[in-house]
Amino acid sequence: MKRLRKIGLTDSYNNHQETQTIFCALLALPLLSMADIRPAFDDVKSLLMDDSPRKDLLQKLLSYVERQWITKSTVGPQRLSLRDNPSRTNNVLESLHSALQYRVKVAHPNVFAFLAHLQRATLDSQADVRRAGRGMAIRRAKKANVLNDKRIKTCLEWYDTNGYTRLQFLQAVSHSITSYTDDMCDMADDNSSDDDASDVDRGEVQQSDTPSTSATTDTAVSAPVDNCDVCLVAPMDPRIALVPCGHRRFCGPCAEEVHNRGLCCPMCRSPIQMLLRLF
Image 1 (cartoon, rainbow, N blue to C red):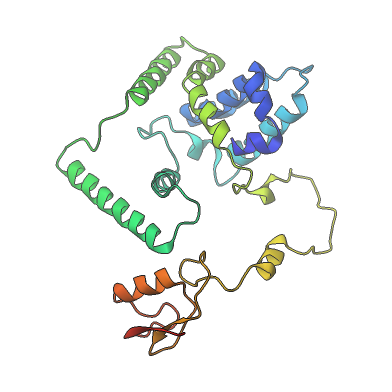
Image 2 (cartoon, rainbow, N blue to C red):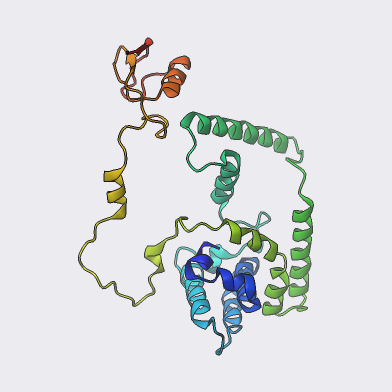
């Protein structure tokens, strides 16, 4: 969905069946075997009409998928295909990050709050491993996921028995993808990272040879330097110092938390004997 929004097809996806059909068919490609992915992609390209008012933008989307999924040496159909993968994912880390983000709920949490979330996630994962080791179900599957899985399996059976062509199969399973992509449309973030360096089409040459000033560098220069060195959010309180090292680049709550937990100084790792409040 990030790529769809970056190209400028979000409104088209919401309002035009052609864009939705092509996009959902592209998302369904990994459900095919690796031998069928390339021919199926060519079938999807044939859906783009020559007189479509959105032809240029959809062509950009198709070129991106071909470059990043189909022909890229590090991906390709062999890694893209999830046909015999029961978990239907080739990126388990993305699932972990999504679950952790759901727990934390904020982009930049306090370091101690984040560690607490991470600790609870670890305990939950250890409990899941113990249940799985005893042959128990980790958790009850959601009804929507069960129905979605059943629909995909039915479509695969029809495809394997020649009841569907490649394109008919992609369009059939696309109905299982539409509700997911509708939710993702609302969650897409312009600031989300996407590999722009690899977005340059082959044969395209960058025009400027002169290095430009990095926006990141500008931000770093203008960023405030008086924030707490632990949470990086609250302003530091120079009236609070750690004894005996004397470091005082922390806010009050963080300094007290570090001291109460019996931790070392975050700056020099020296033991903390007490907090000194300067007035």
